[in-house]
Amino acid sequence: RVRWAETPRPATLQDLLARGGGQLMACIWRAPVLACMIAFSAAGTGRTEFRVTYVDRGSVFDSIPLPGDNWAEVEENEVDIKREGGGLFDGLVGKCVAMTPTSPTDPNTSGWCKFADADGDETYEYYTGLLTPGTGGEGTAVFSNGTGKYKDLRAEHTWTYYMTRHSDDAYEGRGQKHGHYWYLTEDGGEL
Image 1 (spheres, helix red, strand yellow):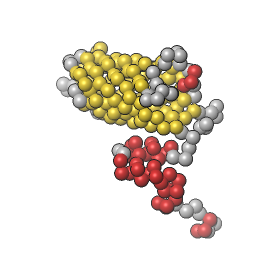
Image 2: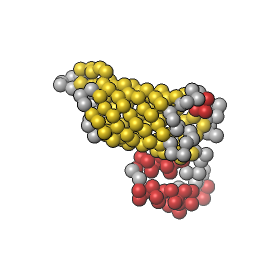
Image 3: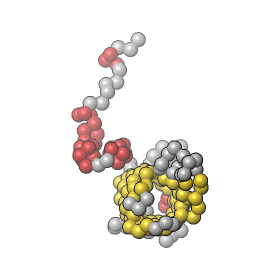
Image 4: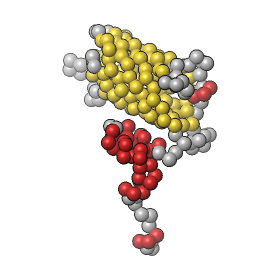
């Protein structure tokens, strides 16, 4: 039988503030909920924050008919990433393939990217989110594993995208990725 005094006490607001309160309060006042959850989950861990900008150029290379008068677009694009001050992720160039919608009942876009830097080190990204043709969108993504400096890497981030040029079969835009990265140990833990 467990006595009340032996049961763990749920975290109070004071406990949460002590563990990363400045980040939590800034997050509540300034950030979208998902970005806030990512930022707060990283508080007090060995995770490193990153923010990069990117340019995305792509084209629709196939369309798949869906029920009704709907079509899924299969897109291929090239992405150039820059990080102010250099460092990890700076200078990555990648190719991505995506599909919109993800399924007949899910309007999101999702895709995979393979990036490489000037040293030849590679990393991979899976992303998903809602894009509005001709304007832009936002979503979440994960960088996972790779070679060289990206071996055992894991990064969770949000992304925003603003389309600067759009035609029937080609587009170009700019965006930001913001989140945290860390390295995994052999047993799946974090460094």
